[in-house]
Length: 575
Image (cartoon, rainbow, N blue to C red; front, side, top):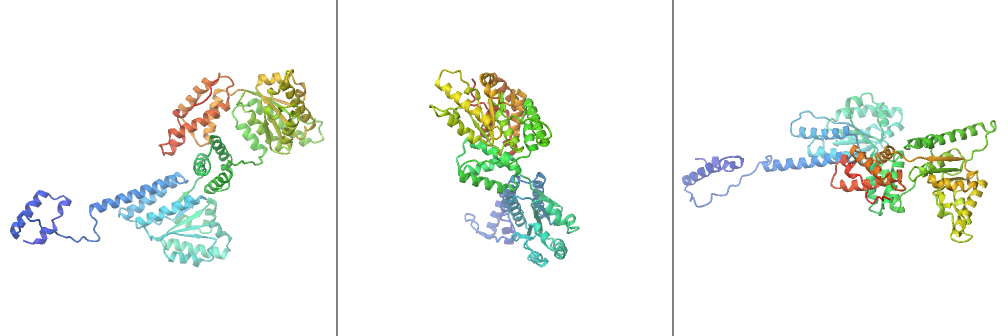
């Protein structure tokens, strides 16, 4: 009997041989060989073939591969690229795996157009593709090489790059190609096309900030795009909510941000990010640096066109009466400006009174009025100074007039907005009321003396303001326009809330809006109901509650969706 047959099969039980049958064979062999059955069988050392992987190793390798692919796919989902681009990268990786496992027989070069101005996007994509090529032995697996077209001075340089046979070549700064003369372009175009075709085990990626850069580059090479670069990965800009979340996370590490600062940060991003020329990483870095240094949220101011200003006015919910008056006012001012001395139109009295309950948009419209008057050059500075009676009235005899004049001088060249102006009303008989009368007298004098360099708006509740104006004929005679701000309807308030959420990047479910309707109707009859101010309060508290409700969730859809459970009225005062 040959020992070799026995020993070769000794470990076959690992692959499914019946152990009881194997033990009988072992016992029979011991007897034939005269070996004491009480002694253990001699240890057999089997030399494993280096090219052989047992099942455990195969399983471990597969688990490692699957874990790595899961890691890549997770990173891909977080990239700011189109959904089609995400799916394309995943398909490329999956094809590499199948090619490695002999499921796919054809090698594909996957030459790619990569359109993105986000350097973080680019670096992540290149790193993932490089790792995938190495893991699946796809093509040549050296480190990728990045080449700027500004540095390529002749076609030999690019030829040497391919001859070094890198697995992944990233050609960037394609605008650098345009600065060369026609002879260089023609020679380079021929050489580059031949290299891409010949080195079919190398993946070439062309990177550009904008599609126009790629189109201009391909225009020099007739068939390069259609024959070799039909794979496209295209970047997108993150929405306002994504920008806010990332800036908030980074800024919070260096500055303790209050709820008010967080709201200001969101407002700043909503206003500035859509207009910036910076890439997202550059914008984020610049803003976070500013916040870390100044310990506050930056302000942003830019002169707008009249169309932009009225665009913002028209986007405001409701306020139809106000919008009509302002459109007519501007038409009159432009007519007077164009007509010059050919028409006998007296100068426009721009001092105003705003009547309306809290939160009906008076302050917001006042800012827009300041922008309109500045755009039309009726005021020298685009500024709004907002004060109340306590900022005008002194505490001691002789203090009020200087205090009021200090505010007036600060507002000179712009617009002075006096909120709750009815509190300046006085019925006489007390020292406090005499101070109020002194403030009013100072204001009336300034409105007359500086009418070409100052616009004053008195604002407050309709009923109280009517009483105030009835007792101050001096103010009434100097008012050119009275604007009435009606309370918002429930539908308008819901629209305002939805607009705030949309600007912040959220989507609000229908049942959440219905819950908001109940809240509004429940609070509407309370004293001094805040209208849009009330809705703003609910909006801020809802975001805070939504953050708590989604703290264990990672899906972007969940993070960006406001549900019924998020609508919060915590700490809202019901008077």
